[in-house]
Length: 233
Image 1 (spheres, helix red, strand yellow):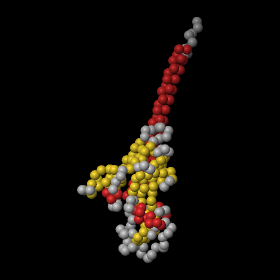
Image 2 (cartoon, rainbow, N blue to C red; image 1 turned 60 degrees about the vertical axis):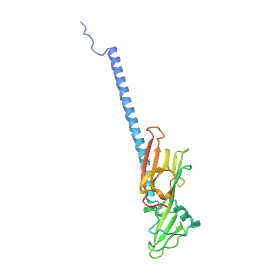
Image 3 (cartoon, rainbow, N blue to C red; image 1 turned 30 degrees about the vertical axis):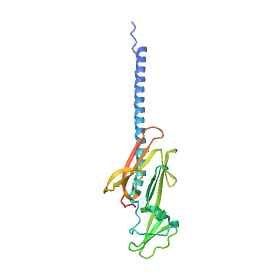
Image 4 (spheres, rainbow, N blue to C red; image 1 turned 180 degrees about the horizontal axis):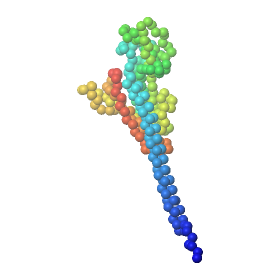
């Protein structure tokens, strides 16, 4: 008498293969979804890091805008009187050219590069010289480097430049508005405008929109406000 053979039938094997295939597809979808989420988070973090770097740099310079030493009266010995002309409007936004021009004091390790330098004894004399034209410091004098920084947004290339050199890519938009004081209540900010009276500027609002070129995350818009510490105009 023959015993019945024990094992898997064709139907059972096909069912096992089908279940394995379904599980494999499910795991693949989970892996793809997890990877997509991770890449989106990385792209978003990169946009935030880029924006933080650029906007922090601008805010630092905006806070020093109009700073020209400890004396209000400065003798202009710069080439063509460029310093006196520029310092009258130390912060300017050209909406047509989409450029922001800042004239501020140089601090830290950046003092080697400057547009002008002011020699002053902080008591009776202050003279502005063009870079490379200043004499040696007289006894009791200190040097205050001043530079002009021009940020320009190239919409066609999606690029923000600093003094003609690429600074940030993947820029969708860059705008500047000025918080101006109410003439009847100067300490307060009455409104934001793109064309202010220089002497009434109290703050600057920067808006920067960045995008991911690989479309892994949505566009992100960043807004910051920098208070002007030095009275302009």
